[in-house]
Image (cartoon, rainbow, N blue to C red; front, side):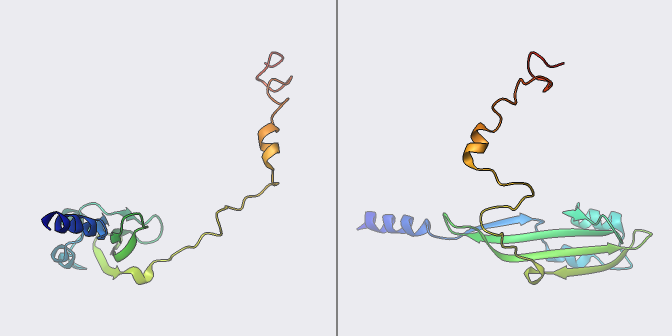
Length: 148
């Protein structure tokens, strides 16, 4: 009886969801400590650490991105919680604003089938297989005996 109970427990534990934290690990106390008009880039880095990424254009903005996913064995992970903290700075490097957004701002892209469209002509299997015969080592091609 005990062996069946242990076996059943092990079988059920294999079906539980695996929780993974990705990106910035958020701490609500630290996030609340950042105040516009009071903090600057140095104090934000000291409090929150280095950002996940920074803006390349426009006003200087630091982004802290975090995700918590849940995944069952052999299944793609699903986002359970997603957050982005955007800290915007003015020209002097002082915090201008702090904005938070969640999974409602995430864009989910659906690829078009299993192929990526490319420019050029379509080649068949035999053309891919035999297409370079006679090209390698041809005079003027730079790889054969007649090349430079």
